[in-house]
Image (cartoon, rainbow, N blue to C red):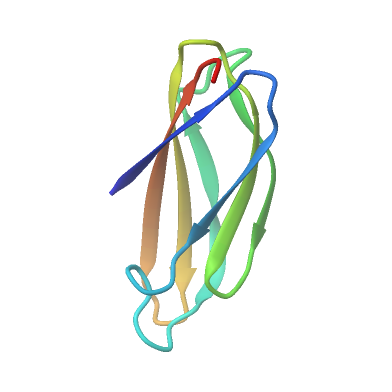
Length: 96
């Protein structure tokens, strides 16, 4: 499932993904952050400034992006049940 979001080029915004319920089984937790990626990786494009991971959430601070561009931002985690899970956000850069 892909979630769609809009951000302005100059904004630095935190996006938090809650993995509980729909993605994690009862009693399951995130054991490792496998990283965040941005596609396409363009000069002056959307960048990940910082990331953090909790037992059931991952957060990335995103900045930049070129007006009119769309980016796929993916977070990947490993769970304590040995599952690798990926979630993707679509970020559109626009004036809101």
